[in-house]
Image (cartoon, rainbow over all chains, first blue to last red; front, top):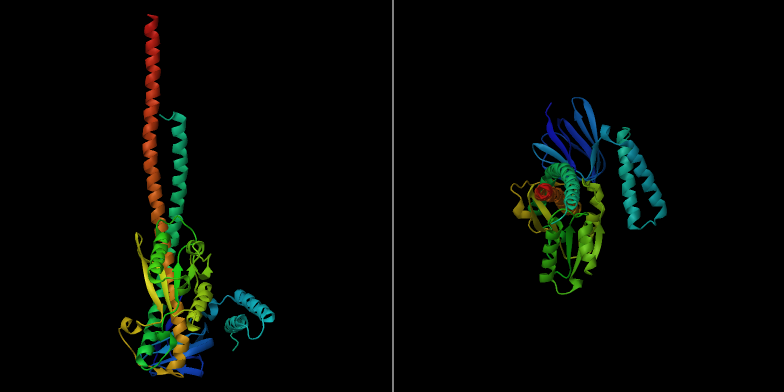
Length: 135
Length: 286
C-alpha cells in the first residue's frame, strides 16, 4: 500500500514522524481524510484527534487546534500543542479540566476569560478522550 | 603593609567567592546546553509555519489582512526581552540600552509608544523611568514552554489587531555562540517581509478559503515569533552568565595568586626579622 510521510510539529519540538497510509482528522469545515497523492492543501484544525493509519493499526495524536498542510510528498500538522495518545498526562488533563470548570462558573458568559476557560476545558476534555480512546 | 592575618582572611574570602562563581558557571553551562537544545527543537516548527504563511500570504495574491498591511503609525509597541536575574555580564544592559536609545531617537512623547516587558530587569528599568509599561511577565522558566507565554503573546498580538499599536517590535539578545550574543531588533507586525524570506512557494488548495486561514494562521505565526525570540534570548542569557561567571572565577584566581605572593613575602619578612633579632641579641651578649 502506498504511504505518505506525516509529521506533527509543535513549538516544543516534533511529536510524531512516520510514514502512514491515511491521515484523518477534523478540520474546521468537517472531517477530512488524506490519502497519498492528495492535492496540496491547507486547512485549520479543530481541537481534536488526528488518526494515523499504518499497517492495519491506527495511532492517535491529540491536537489543540493548529493546521494541516498537505504537500505531494508530505503531510505536516502544525499545532501549538500535540501529544501522542500514550504520552498524555491524564492526571494533568483532569486537573486542567477541573480548573477550567471552576473558572467558567465564576465568569460571566461574554467575558474573555470565560471563552479562554472554555477553550482550556475543550483541550483538557480532548486529551482525556484521546487518552481513553473515546471519540 | 597588611598583617599576615589580614591577608589570610582576604585569601579565604576570595576563595569562597570563586567557589560560588564556579558553581554558578556550571549551573549556567547546564542550563545553556538545554536552552540551545530547546531553541533547536523549535526550528522545524518555525520554518514550517513561516513557509506556509509565506506561501499563503504571497500565493493567494490580493488577500488583504490587517496584519499584513501598513497603517499610519500612531503608537508603537516594543517587546523587550531580558532576564529576571542579573550577574550575566552586559546581557541585560545591552538590550536595555538599545531600546532606550531607539525610543529616545524615535519618539518625542510617552504617548507614542508602549512597552511589553518580559523579564524583571527590563521591567524595573522602564517602570522606574516612568515609561508606559502595559504588560509584563516575570518568573519565566529557564526552559519555557509555549503554553507559559501563550497568554502574553496572544494578548500582545491582540493589541495590534484591536489598534492599540500600529506596529510592533521585539528586542532581544540573539544567540550566536557561547561567547557572542547580539542585540537584535525584529519587526513583528505588520508582517511585511514575508515574501522575501521564503525560497520555495507552493500553491495550495484552501479549506475553506485563504482569508479564513490567514485569520487563524497569522496570529499563530506572530505568537511563535515571540516564542522563538524568547528561546533565543534564554540561550543567550545562560551563555552570557556562563562567560561572566567564568571571568569572575578567573579574576578571583588571579587575585588569590597575588595575595598568596604578598602573604609569603610578609611571612618571609617576619622570619627574617626574627632571625635578625636573635642574631642581634646573641651578638650583644658576647
